[in-house]
Every structure is written in structure tokens, then in C-alpha cells.
Image 1: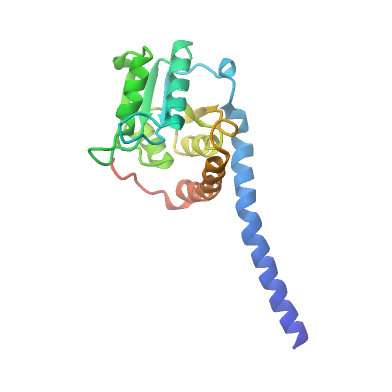
Image 2: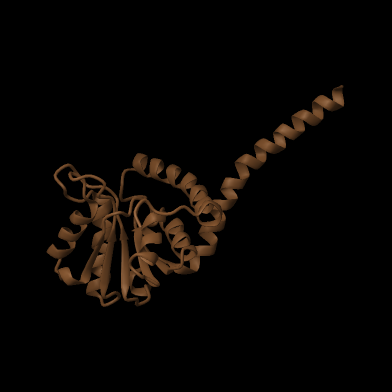
Length: 210
């Protein structure tokens, strides 16, 4: 009886250990395998035709949140330095009064990017859907993905598994945005990586709109 109880407890302990370690290992795996495709210095970013900028929230007046403005500014900087020729802006326009991509377009135009070099994806409701639609709807085969550094490994991994030969340009996050906010974003990202792995390898869902 004693041995049975001990074996039962050992089994539960090993199960709990596995449940805790596996997600960590999967996150480390995504970070490691995408490391060679991620850049944080604009001078080292390779030249590509297209940059994909991911949405990140707008204020009630329709202007970009600081995180979104930072992403779009990075795209503008890549454009101005001749690193890319076109900007594909992908985000949430799920209602008439919420339009991430329009806010991104206005910001970039005010920075001097011609409207003819900007394409909008109004149905980029998630990283997965944005990457899927970039390849299937917009025919993107190679691109620079622009987002904050904490989000970049998942974005690059998802893009490449969905058929886009993606590299990433990561903008600063920790030390720029509030520590509490970054803690929440990073915690959510930890679990989003697990979801992304399920999506690209097992579930393979279709986007909301295709």
C-alpha cells in the first residue's frame, strides 16, 4: 500500500513537472530556432521588397497607441533607408469605429510614405491570421516582419511555417513601455507561443476571412 501511494505521488509529481517544463522548453525552442532571422539593429536588417507591420491597438480618437506607433515608425524608417519598397499593414478592423490599419496608414503617410506603397489588410485579427493572409491573399513570399521584440519570435516562426520566408525587425519594449504592461504582454505571449505551435503544426485553422 505504501509503495502504491508513493508511486501515485511520484506519477503526479512527474506529470506536474512535465506540464511546467514543456511550455518553457517550447518557448525556448521558438526563440532559438528564429534567432538567426531576428534583427534589432536597422543597419543589419536585410533588404526585402515588403515589410509587414502588425496591428497593436488604437485610441478612441483613432490614433495609434504608442506600441503601434513605434511599429509603424520602424516600417517608415526601413522604407526611408531603402530596406523595403512596400508596407503591408495588417490589423483589426472588425467594427466601423475600430480601425487599426487606417490609423497605421495615416501615420505612415504623414511621415512621407506614398499611399501607393502602402497596402492594408483589414482582417489581420491575430498573428496567425495576418501571416496566413499575407501569403494566401496578398501573395507575399518574402518579407520583413515588424513588431516589438517580445512578440517577434512567434511572428517569425508563424510566418515561416505558413510559407513566408520571413525575417524580423524587433523594436524595443522592456525599458520603453511600463514594466507592469510588459510583464502582462510577456506573460500572455508565453502562452500565445504554445497556441501558435498548435495552430501551425496541428490545428491549421483557416482565417476568419479568406
